[in-house]
Image (cartoon, rainbow, N blue to C red; front, top):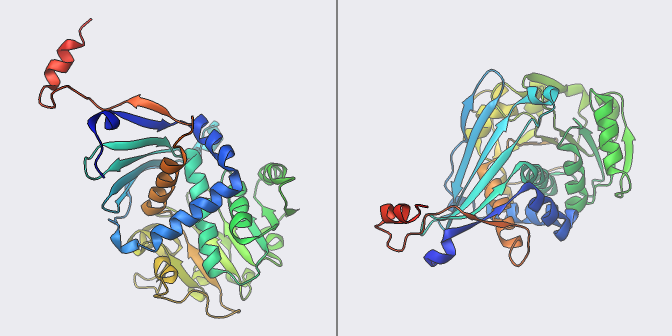
Length: 349
């Protein structure tokens, strides 16, 4: 892709306000379904991408990470943090921004907020995995962990898979009531539950999205019945899990990128060679997904850079011919590319 210097000098910036307005412009359900389709499309061309585990800077209170990838034409990265203690201080647990760039020139094509977009793409990813792994006709989901991600997870499952019966549980009933209130009137049959056991009763799909940075046991083996699909998305860093290892051991485990998931996911509890299936291979029919009605399938989702790339690429396309971005004067554009100093001198008042 060849772009002229004048077109590359100004970089579209999608602010939080722009992102929210873009989502409503597109329609929330359609946006979630579209991002799920973009992720699925990119997973189908998995082998084209640069792949590396995210680069993390860990501290006692959280982690800051960079998540880069490229398909050879575009390069993208996301900056993201994870600080569970933030919630008690009135701050977001996760914040993020991302950049998409042109590989041919190295110039940025778009800078975007990704706090809202990460919530959307994470939900879309879970829904896409559920599409390939859950039992046919699944309609009931237990949503365990009713924090910032929960409504998005429910809405994506409805948009992509038609799941419309939701059973909510959180250790904080106020969070459950918040989630139920936000989902009211959006086409769900909602049950508020007082225990995780009550939440998973009759569920075809169980999604866990808890925030504590610790080895949690949200689900034990005796709680998980035959034929269930589990999206375990809260265990997304070293030392943080949600499932008892016996649940992992009896499940067929599907992952994004094994070198990252073995460090951060539920399978960090298991032997280093614990068998897993890469989800991209299921999408490309190189591996089986669910093989029987009684099988327990587990998507051990930790979030991978290609998903962020897909979401950024979707937004880059969606903002065209809309007012939902601002041009940033981010790239120096001297008349002579060799005379950056001269451009600086001419800027004197």
